[in-house]
Length: 285
Image 1 (cartoon, rainbow, N blue to C red):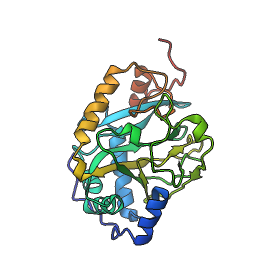
Image 2: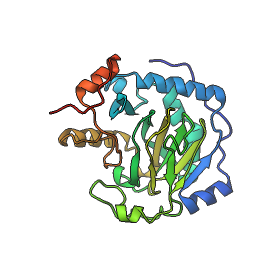
Image 3: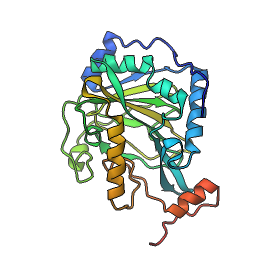
Image 4: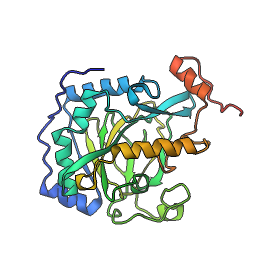
């Protein structure tokens, strides 16, 4: 679908010396109020558009989870092939300038996704992104909050000052449970239109959405341009790996097993997309 020229220069994308110091110290950085009200409204429209697409339509990949209200969308990714507005936002000068300031060198887009975490949606186990992101050594991600994220609806929880190395992993590729239990998890609520940047080795997790409000967010991941444009390779690898693996009880959205949502059946997904009454009970195979 063709979109009008986007208006994304919300404010000068200035990363200050204090921001850089905080980033290097903690491994994450909150920037409040990046999007103006009109730009946020435009982003909400785009997210709604993307959520209505079928899996594969406009090259968008869709993932679903089973909630008490039936199947619900939990993630969309590979978003920008046919969406001018999102492409201009994600790869525009403001975002790339901030990524460059934090990386210390020019950056390119590695991948992009929308996590929906609708009311009743599941959370994510303690993990670092680096084990899920092959081909390059260092990545950083920017979460653009579409809705306010609170402790009740499953905001990110970060661990400051633990982004220096990949930590010991369990069989799912997440942080080993005994280590995660000792870490100082810091809830990081944000308002709609805020940014939250975090290093690919910054430990993070999020709880389920136990509220009646949705918690949607756009995540844009970047890597150093010197390490190459790896976006196509990432998605090719992901699709190959998913095709080779046997479906399990949880929805697979990543190259690691961090997502804790229950996988719906194809029939439950079809019912959700057609607006039929839900059946939240897993079907027998």
